[in-house]
Image 1 (cartoon, helix red, strand yellow):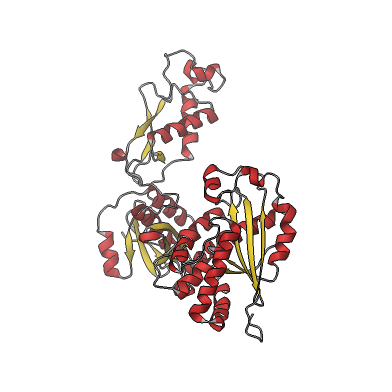
Image 2 (cartoon, rainbow, N blue to C red):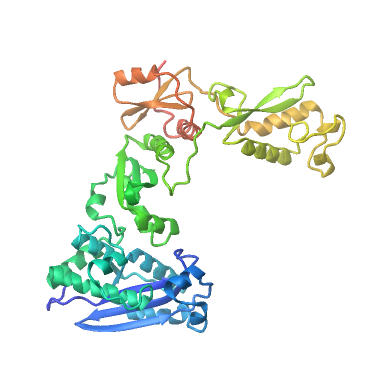
Length: 464
């Protein structure tokens, strides 16, 4: 990229204004480009008709109103002109993944492939001014006494980036800055607050990773059999996926815990999410409010679903449990769905009040087979109910006692679907086997049940 005269390549300092932060739903309202090449500066700016409503808070922030853009060209109208303006230039922006992600998505919608070399000025600031507490644009303006012409307008903010570039040149010189272009565009996939050294230190091995935001607060916890590859997958996906973009912009640090294999990673992920409650996970829930249906025969020989609360449950031991739900409401919704699908009587199931011998409401609207008035024999109704519920039966623990599963050389110890711990020698195995009952966890039950019917079924070692 460095030419014989030691000059910069063509640099395009870019800023955009948008109707919001979702690059699939929201649209660009303004683009500003300040190009620096061969010691000459040129500018390009356009208001863009987003063809969607600009929220009032965005109008107040940017000063761009619906009236200002209503008669402007759409992005599709000027896409080729924008592409030509940026062609062959280094794309420089602050939190560049945001601006680049929006432009890439906008070009894609009109059938244009957009893949410039990208340099982020947040990364540049962190590299050259590591003692600076923050690296957002307002902090950079204050720290380096930049001259503000039009904050939160595209060309005004692009000009601030050009001014910051001049500050950086004074700090390290042109030759060093040209070297940094090479270094930083090579790391274009990384978020602004994450450096390559941290990524290189993540092993490509099984385990769990934790993304942290400001003040070391957990943002997201995940698992993988190849930690480094999975972490990089998040950052590469940020250019096309809203959730990954949001994560990349907020992440400040990454930690990880290696495990011996995939099953260990799955169990650890479930436990870590419950313990640390990261803000961007779809939270796995605790099991203390679990309930399940039990089928019990009344004096008339009719099977009745009875809801068992957590204190009455012994999953893995009871042979008459169906469902496992996080709330009574969820349990009743499930049973109503079963009744409708199999045309069962909601009065007999206890879901609806009714008089003995009289047709229930479901029968009147042709959703009940008539067991309430004897059209369907009780034995048939019982059989239909048991058949329907059997699809959701909680499996009894299929072993006499605790087991160990070999997962990459370490032994995962389990009993009655509960995780007891991980052992690496005989003493630890013995200690875990006699450690007593652990709390049942529905998510770990699902993980272990799947493992025992999949690739781990031949790795089981009975411990009693």
